[in-house]
Amino acid sequence: MISRNFKNVLVVSVAFLSLFTAYGGLQSLQSSLNSEEGMGVASLSVIYASIIISSMFLPHIMIKNLGCKWTIVVSMVCYVSYSFGNLYPGWYTLIPTSVILGLGGSTLWSAKCTYLTITGNQQAALEGKKGADVINQYFGIFFFIFQSSGVWGNLMSSLIFGQDTAIANIPEEQLQLCGAADCGMNISTNSTSTRPAQKLVWTLVGCYIGVGVLATIIIAAFLDNIDREQASQFRENREPFCQTFLATFALLRDWRMLTLIPLTMYSGFEQSFLSGEYTKNFVTCALGIHYVGFAMMCFAAVNSVCSYIFGRLAQYTGRAALFLLAAVTNFSCIIGLLQWRPDPNQLAVFFVFPALWGMSDAIWQTQTNALYGIIFSQNKEAAFANYRMWESLGFVISFAYSTFLCLEYKMYILLTVLLLTVVTYPVVEYHEYKNPTAALVDQDKSCGHQEKNDDIVQTKM
Image 1 (tube, rainbow, N blue to C red):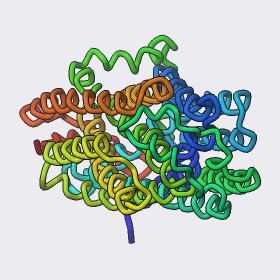
Image 2: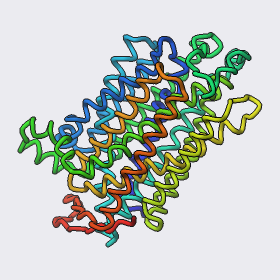
Image 3: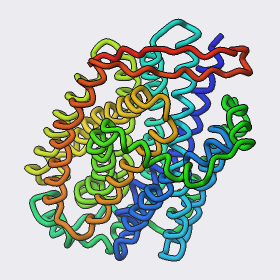
Image 4: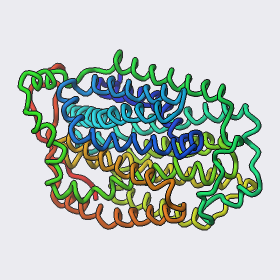
């Protein structure tokens, strides 16, 4: 029999798998599918700008009032609205639904991270283990299942769009503009050869809406409401609005949070580069939009497997060694992409880069989430709101200059943020190694655990 906490981790993971099968597939296609006047990339910028603003106050208020479970349900409904906006893409449909998704994005991830941290600490107390180890395992399991969403979402897009044979015709003059060798801003993404038939687009978006609704039902029906009593007590003794509004910013007085900003922002930069720049300037440009799904499937599959592996491996190697591996891998990929001119005859190379990127992204996601949950264990809601806010700022900046800068310059910016991360992150890691954080274990009283225990988390450097 699996434990109650492990069952909840599986429910959250499967629901996120279903939800992001839809959103992940749409995000990968925006720069190519809705390329007119940069509308697709603009919608992504609005999403993450909305996440930044709402992260300042919304996660703390919603989680404290509704609890993690119902915050996740409401947030998932916001994500489904974006799929509806893509049925008839335009400025008046994509931008409003992007704002709605952004509002749900800040609360969804904060609630998920808070939920996994609570369950990890609870299970560690029951088994007499270190909270950090169980949290790492839970985040590894979550990202193992969650990251596979990219496989199914992108498989759907490639199979459906592959029915339109016209999109496979890539003119020779376009191939000369692919990759980072040329500016890449002159690629004719508005040509009919890059956009599938509208009937196929509607079919794909309809499938995405269905799996999004399924995710919402899974959470509402099967997830335990582990913090129901805390939410009830909060509603009875409400804090002043200004206090909840400033909860996210109050944590910025902690120098560790400030030092982790480059690491957190880089997570947004590297994800947006692959989904926005690589898919458009390398895959769509040289192979056709129907290959975007296959390339992102490769990324998602490797990401999923590595998330599980690294989540388990962290207790033996420590986070620092894994972060170093991710940094070296990304650095090598960026240098390689700067030198490579995409050639349809080198089909395997188009999948090597997403695979390596998926391995490094698995480390950035699992270990950064776990690091926040461990270091800021007594301010989880505010900490993960900060995480989402700064990660989203990386997305916004990256998507904002997407239509204005040459690809080569964008890659140099990515390198700069990566190098800044390599300099700042070890400072926090070394301090945590020397001064382990005391993690407050949240117990679920409905399970019969009345007392609270202090678990001193000794983390490996």
